[in-house]
Amino acid sequence: MKSHFAALAGIAALFATGAARAEKPLKDYSFIRGVNYGMNADQATLEKQLGYAKRVNLNSTRIWLNYTGYERDPKGYIDRLRNYVRTSQRLGFSTMPILFNGNSLNPDTLKPEFRSRGDAYAKAIVEALKDEPGLLMWDIMNEPTTNDYHDRAPADQKQQRLDEINAFVRYYLSFVKKIDPVNATTVGWTFSSQIEYSGDLEDVLSFHDYTETRAKVEAVYTKAEEFAKKLGKPILNTETACIARANPYDEVLEIAQEHKTGWYLFNLMVSGYWGQIHGIFYPDGTVRDPAIISAIMGFYRKRDIDTMIRPVPNREGAADRAIRGIEAALKGTQGSFNAQASPTDRILDAAEYAANLLESAEMVPMFVPPTAQIKSWRALPENKRDANAIRQFAYDLGVTLKKYCLLY
Figure 1 (cartoon, rainbow, N blue to C red):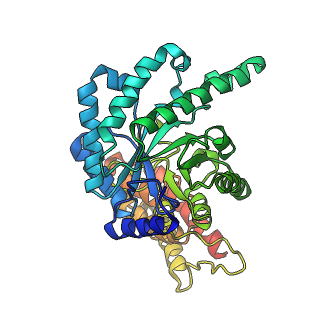
Figure 2: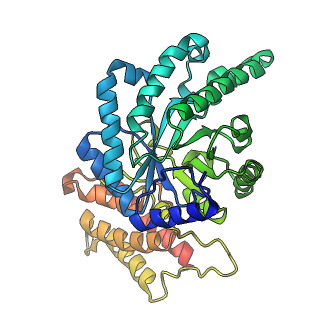
């Protein structure tokens, strides 16, 4: 292990060069601003998507490997993996490869008969990457206990299965260290309370956090810090942030900063199986929520009610004008004996005025931003638009603006 002074010098060097890597285990990984990703994209897509991550100052990726993929084409798999690590390093990212994945655990891999296959795979991967400057550390296994084999075990087999899993993890921690005694090792445990299972063999203690309240997230870090102090090792949160688990990016990144802990968000792209509940960037480079980008950059939403300054969209009379515009557009042209409805473009113009005020002041849900709905209608020719739906939409925006600006 490096001395404390050397570790600090190493961290300074990492910041100076812009690449988050370490030739030996460090005392502190708080500089890690990572994201979970994958290595299967083509070269152009890989560079484009890592380019999104670079723009918001992320500096590391954590990627899933698997032994079956390697066994189908050993040389091709190693070539793709090495290219990924080198491309990432060139763009300013370190890489944390995950050798085994507990989420898709096949119980047969825990048996002694699997060891020859597992050893061959792990040896090939480690020998291929151990001297790569872009390698940050080895994650031996992602969430070893988060699978049906463990979670649905009969009560009388629960401990036995946990022991089998932990024996597997500890075996490969030692196995990898023999092949690569230089680079750091870790295990991506689901909970910080599980660090004790293999922490004595790990160089870095890592855990995941998807808990649902600030107090619970704080408790996760407190538990990790207790083990870290006891074992004299650094910590990392290698998975965090999920819309569907009440674990918002803005909150968890603020807490990680307060605890001076590095992190990996799950995950980079809004796509695929996890797209509904995870992800930062869409494939076209747009974002799900600018608040996520703000939090990544270290700026967090103000939550002190006593010192918040509330937005007032009508301070200069804009809300009054927007409402009058909606009313006029909905009224249309009134003649002595007939009335003519406004073209939908006129109604959409009036609606957009109100929508921009409401979105800027955060007075409407952004599940489907009003301006996105307006853009969708504008893309249709006039004769294909649902005029009644547009009129109702504009009316509702006017009502909402009146409500929040107290215009009765």
